[in-house]
Length: 146
Image (tube, rainbow, N blue to C red):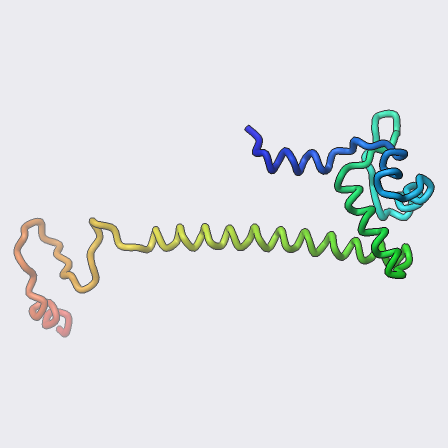
C-alpha cells in the first residue's frame, strides 16, 4: 500500500501538461521553454511520440528560473545556481537519512548493551558453582596473588 505523501510526490513529478499549457501556467513563452530545455535548465518528460510533458515540479522550477532572470542572472548562471540547489537538496536528504540511521543504530546499540534480567549486575559476585553457596571474595583475591 502506498502512503499518501509518496503518491503526492509521484504526482508532482508526473508530466501532465503540454507545452502550451505549461507556457500559460508559468507565464513563459513556448520558445523560451524550448530554450530552457536546450540549455538543460529543465527536462520535461516525453511521451512515446516525443511530445513534451511538464510536471508540477517543472512548473516550480520554471518559477525559480523566472525569479533568477528578474534578479539579473543570465541563463548560464541560472544553470549553475539550479545545479547547486539540486545538489544541496540531495545532500540535505542524504544527511537526514544518515541522521535517522544513526539514531536507529545508537538505539539498537544501547538496547544490546543494556543489562538484562538474567545478566550479572555490576558488583555482584560471579559463581561457577551450581549451588547457592556464597563465594568468599577475600579467598579469591588471595588465590589471584599467588
